[in-house]
Each structure stands twice: as structure tokens, then as C-alpha cells.
Length: 480
Image (cartoon, helix red, strand yellow):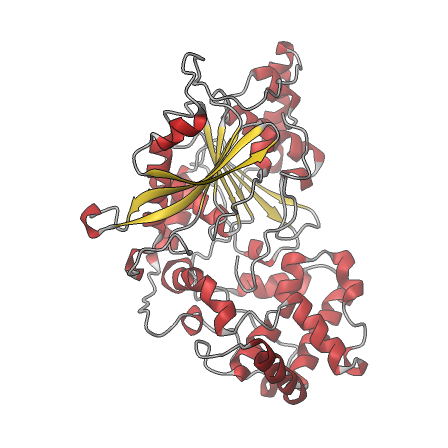
């Protein structure tokens, strides 16, 4: 990572250079449907539907924007398009064809409601959002799972970009949080000429899948000792009381129709939920939330232990019904992405029967899997030595940041920042003031906005509570 003063010096030079251009705020016009020259009066919906393979699912109104939910025809195999196609859902939040465009994916399903990611607010631009392949309904039928890999997904993005670049000719920035930040990184690795910048939030980087000591070190330092002790005690107590709490779990499963075929048994599912407890707390909670954790686990009632674990980890997550929507993630974790393994030195071995279970245990056995250890090493090496216009933001208290991307001497105009005290929802707004200003300026510059706006180093669009999302995108743990 670049030395601490390098980016601060760059910020001083940048603002000093650009401040002479003034500090006028860019206007925020209503959504428009013309091209960049203003000569094409074709409605934006008609322009989008003129793209070969594009079809409309629905349009939803939002003040100042047009919002479209679309299907786009993609090849199942980008190396051999003759192997068939599938319909991939995308959405377009349209501001104007004369504005920059942010290309977003969370790495899972796409939301079909209007929403604006932080870079989109910063640049006051359009937003194209992509549903990751194999997350339903964007799944080929029949599903050839061997075609679910990071290159195929990056090629999905490349085709979407190619299809829409003529409509949105200004600068493009890729972004995503967690698995979406990983996705934005992989897209840049395979198609480095597409985007003008990348903003990746809380993106894990499991370079060597079998070496996860960074996570163990993280859990000995995060937060305060008092908070760690509380969490560890509740987690241990949930295993000590396995028999009565599993009876409660069995009744809960029967009441809701939950089954455990994929993971193998209720007992395995129970332990998986409990072992996610500490990780899940730090992923989605703040240090101030420690007051919600039972202060004395040994004297807490069974219901208090159950409710704390259920609130943070969720007893429905390792059921067949909870796992099924996330089969594509676990397949990728077990074939390319890797998955963390941590230890529990504060829990006696007699209480831990399975430990952190591998992704293979969470994917139906009918789907073959084979891990490819070279894939993440390749991406990590590329980012370290070849990153260009890439910004990574991590949360100080987020476990997924224990193994993160770093940029080396070969990288150009690329940075890694950490938001103090924040979790898996860390963002540019949560950085310390000078880093926040610098990161905002770099995003604006990459987006190609006027120099005066870059110099101000502030978002061009006002915060909109109905559009702008600030919390972590909660996925059932243990998932990025």
C-alpha cells in the first residue's frame, strides 16, 4: 500500500491545481433521453430496447430518474456461444446520457427497486446494476455449473458494457460491495480497458485458501476485550447447552418446514449457526451494539442465548431453504474464491464437533466441485502490480477485511483505505476527513467531471433517503 503521506500530498497538489477553476457545483438536471450531442430525441426506453437481446420487464417511476428492470440475453459460455443462452436481469437508473455511468453489482441477486450506490451519488450519474449469473432467475436451464466462474461473470459485464456504451458514452466506473467488490476487481483484471475507475468496498481477497491465520489474529484485537469476552461467552454457552437448544431448534424447524439434507443434519446446521455468531456480530454490528449481547452468558436463560444467536446468525440460514438461494456463492467459494477457516481457542474441543465447515458441505452433492487454487493468486498478483484507477475501502472492525487487496509499486493511481470503527458497511463517507476528500476527488476525476467539481471533492448529488443506501448489504453469514 502506498505510504501514508503520498496520497495526502497528492490531494494537496490536486486541490491546489484545480481550485483556480472555481468551486461551482454541477447542476442536477431532470432525467433526459437524448444522446450526448443532444441531437437524438429518441426516448431512453426505446434506445435501451433497441439493443439486440434487451427486453423490458418493467419501468418504475422515481423523481428525477427513469428506472428500468430489463432482461439481457447472454451466452451460457462466452468461449462457445453455440452452447446456448440465458436471460440475465439488469437494471438501469437513468439520469442522463450526458452523465457518467456507474456499473454496480453486489455479486448476488439484483434489486428491482430504484437504488443509488455511493459512487453514483458522488458523480451524480446513471447506474447500471447486474444480477450475477446463476442467481435465480438469471440461471441457465439446465444449469451447467462449470460455467459459473469469475471469467464468465466478468464477460457478462463486458458484454453489457459494450451494449450500453453507445447510449452512455461518458466515463464509466465499476463498483460493488463485498462479493460485489470482488466482482468489480475481477472484471477489471480481465477487461482493464472497459472502466475508467473501480471503487471496491470491503472486498475479501483469500489468496491462499488454506492459510487463514489473519482472521484468527483479527478476532484477538477487534473492538474491546469486554465486548470480545461477552461474544465469546455467548457462543461457548450455546454449544454447552446444545441439547436443550437443539430441541428448540427442532421445534422451530418443524414449525417452519425447514429441512437439513444439504448440510447433513440438524446438529451440523446448529453448530454452523453458532460458530458464525462472533463473525456475524462484527460483520454487521458496531462496538456500541455490544450492550445488546447478554452480559453474563452463564446465567442467561436459554431463550436469551437463543435469541442473541438467532438475531446475529439466524437459525434459518443453514437449512435447505436458507442455503438454496446461495448455492451459486458456495459453489464459487469452493471452486475459486476460497473461504475462511477460523479457530475457537476459548471453547473446549469437546464442544466443537465440526468446526468451520467447507463450502462443499453447503452445496448439493449432485453438483460437482473442484477447487482451483491458482485463480485468486492470479488476481492478487495482477492487482498488486497492475491496478490502475482502483480504490479499495475497508472497515476497521469487519472480519472480511483481515485478508484484503493491496496495491504495490506497479499500481497506478490506486489506493486502499480503512474506515475507523466501521463494519461491512464501510464507505467513503466513513473515512477520516482528509482521506474522504481525497477518495471523493479521485472518483470524480475518474468519472471525467469538470475540474471545478473535482477540486470541491464533494458528492455532486444531494443525499436521497429513498435512493442512497448506507448500511451493509446483509447476506446470511458466513458470506461476503
